[in-house]
Image 1 (cartoon, helix red, strand yellow):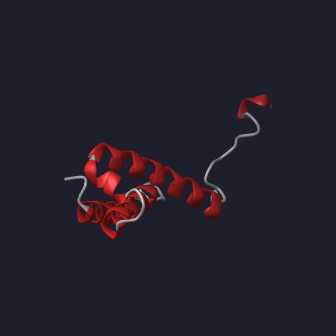
Image 2: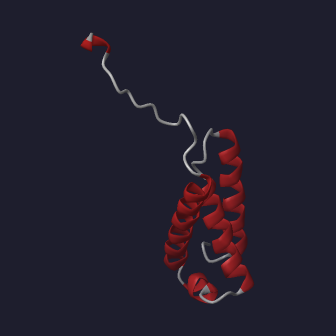
Length: 94
């Protein structure tokens, strides 16, 4: 079942819908990875038949594509201002 292209695209759309509900950019890398995996299988890109033949291969490609998508979005969009709070002094030091 993981070798069918529309299953990956449907999973990507479901995860993208989950991304809308959950605050932050947590699941967007998974959504992009799933849609790209489905596109590779469906369009017959190099490696598409290899992924369709063995579902574990598709899961590995999905994992790698998701990681690349998440890291590139993290690098491209950056960390938002105020996302982390650094405490530089202790209130008990006075």
